[in-house]
Length: 203
Image 1 (cartoon, rainbow, N blue to C red):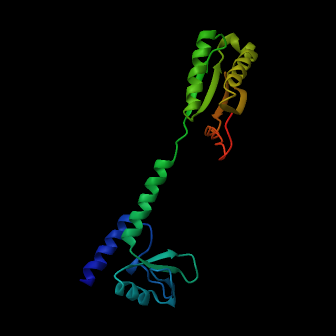
Image 2 (spheres, one colour; image 1 turned 90 degrees about the horizontal axis):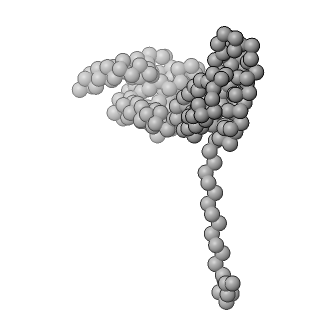
Image 3 (cartoon, rainbow, N blue to C red; image 1 turned 120 degrees about the vertical axis):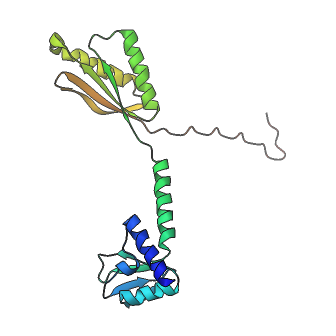
């Protein structure tokens, strides 16, 4: 029965490839921590493995760089399950911030500009960064100042919800800037009306 359990542990370790456990630990001396966090002292890996087997648990090397290495007795299968669950929960809570791009031309009309502006504001309200760029073609390169005015106007109209991360900058035939959403503060709760004390009349 003991041989079957040891074989199962080895297969489990190969699958995860995270820690050295059980028979993989061959150090002459290790510092052992019990499954309740108690210090069990310095001993051989063989002696530590015997103690772990008596408790029907695993011996796991948790600090291989220490002198001597530190090992702990634990249920390694349960530990890995909990770690995987924590990683999944952390990923669920992470918000992936995307960079959305708005492209304009120097001769853009008011209606098109307002449409681009609404799209940019929507991206910012959704929590994404926005790259706004103006593409110059041919002789338009002689009037890059028009593109800068467009971009700064765009940034000014987004000032309530966005910060200017990167000011307009000309790179090749493109002038671009970056906006990032401002942290959203929760709305303040309305103050509760004061209740008159006993004996006082409310006017």
